[in-house]
Length: 287
Image (tube, rainbow, N blue to C red; front, side):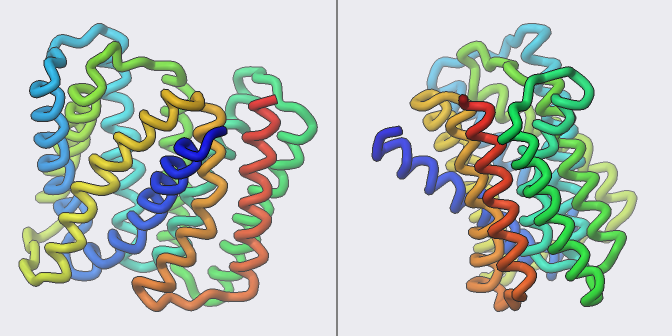
């Protein structure tokens, strides 16, 4: 892996991990689903405009439409929707740690239900990863974390893992930005009616909230997408996914830095174990 790939991977992991602390700022002052609907509407418009400017086409194949709808619903509406709801009641660091188990869930589901080969190192990694997440969740629940919010985060990661496993290998066919933009609009289309049915329209216009929303729209929504596909194109999906092992550490560190969330001793142990587990799974799949 060359130096450029390492820089791209680190930047992607940093932006991905920062999204949870920034989301916590957003949902502290505004309804989560309507905030997400705004984010996806604007991010989708930017992505579609970029695609059209690059000469990409709005016409998609049946497989591309399937991937667009499934990921738009599972990743944007369900995964992020449940996480945003949960972060009204739990700390961003815990949400980030649970979300970081998604690569472990993909490997576990593929092994259990699709017969995908997982070497002994991968099995050890799964045990370590899920053990670390369980340790952190148990300590947080004992410390007063909301059980329903924790469950929502677990279900969110499972929904995204299921979609990722089902559509693994789905390609954009050269229409990357069109597909990304439409995925965001699928999420927005699902969240607008849910948001108006469940929440009261209120989006604060103070500088802190606007800055957090702008960051969500541009960085996780647009820049992270560019970095991810650049990384995959340079070193392949399996090696690129190995950078996910940094997410538990970065998620906890950024939540502490940006929000002042406390770091517990069990967090440090659990994060180290989760990171080791994710890295072991990725190395076993790369071998």
